[in-house]
Length: 364
Image 1 (spheres, rainbow, N blue to C red):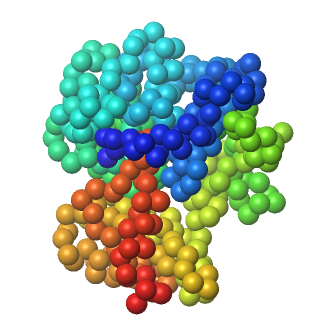
Image 2 (cartoon, rainbow, N blue to C red; image 1 turned 180 degrees about the vertical axis):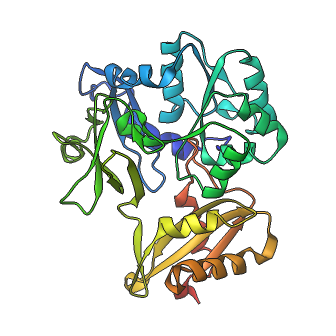
């Protein structure tokens, strides 16, 4: 669930990244229309320099005819900002879900209310995976999703059982891949949008490179980082993937996805996907922590309705499908995963919880 509060610390991190009101640090280019911060889920956010041309480059491909957008994501995030930009292009003001800005929790009721206010239009909405799961959990949420012509889902992989549930209820879900540096989602269900080019760099172990008219022009007050990541070849992402002969993009995970556990390479993303497909697991985040002598530990944080047996079920399932090295050493069972305001899991908070658990190998 998208967090309903924004901590002062997080606001300060965003301000540091974007530097919005320092007259001694002018915006790098007159072409820059907006500076948005990346999520900073694992560290300090970066301020991304976005142009008006880049922000609107894909509007015609996405919007369709007279799309009515529902705003369900914070407008300071790329997903939420995109909704505002696309609504302007469609000529219809976006309809805000009552939970926007933390006014109240995101529930099926507040989402259904927004959909009802958009009744009769071609309704489009952008959600994160946690929101989609919650809406698919009851009849009211399902009916509201069914009324939408387009449900874009980003900010993380979509579990196979969640996708299957959406298909079962005839909800038109399209997964969106992109990042703030690409003005948001530019690959839909593995297919690059018109004008977008994606390839796997041959000299970087499958790192994906994205090019197209929607690219940002760099990072705020970070010229060296801008030159490193924004190249003549395109934007160098932090994701491993492949592009087949038909141009379909497959995401394997982040470049820092693989961790070494007891001498064995383990894909964090693979472990997360296995746990996400366990029944009664509503949300999951898997991460690694470095301890003394570079010892690595794998931890899973979950939302589930299974109760105290959840850790044993996770350990057995992961052991069976991925082997003993991939089994998390600790499972944190939470009512809700901590979220950043943009809908991404706050991994820094989860790491703190894990460090305080006393359950890591070097703490025993």
